[in-house]
Image (cartoon, rainbow, N blue to C red; front, side):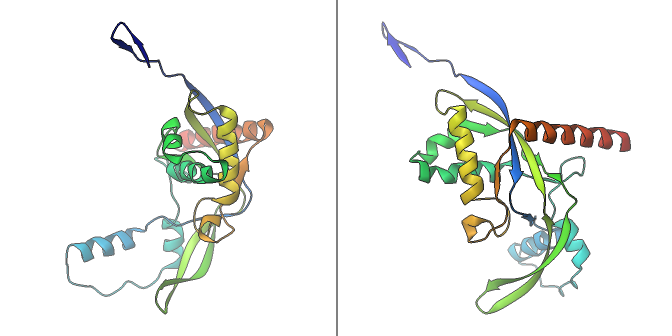
Length: 213
């Protein structure tokens, strides 16, 4: 911002669009809110009478745990990747508030590419002395490509890449990630060759989906 003869001149934003490939370094566990869980929560908030709990259906729970895009292909919330990068800022002495304003990942969901998901069964604690069995999807080998718009006056491309590397190592995404004392959902920034391969996979997926529709 410049002041000249009592006139305020705003500096034009210098934005740059880049694509950042990420490669999973540990399996990704998805756990999207199921239709059943959302309905039970809504009924409770609306003070509706309790109904008998539905019998567990492992296959249904597995399928409903997967985030999918408008075409039904596996995806994951983009905000999870942004949070991983921003939350890693503490190790780099950067201010998180400024970081959130410095870049945006385009789209609510980003594609998850790689192997087909497999079901997993886990015992989880849901309260004091209470346990439950959860059936969720695991992507063992996975990757994605983020389309990012960056304000280069606030954050350099090199700093952004470093943030995603740090976030992938120490924060992660999904269930049982490092941020929650787990080892799943870790990732690293892909090389140029790996990013090119991911983009090729994404193009093939788009072609296949168009052929089906």
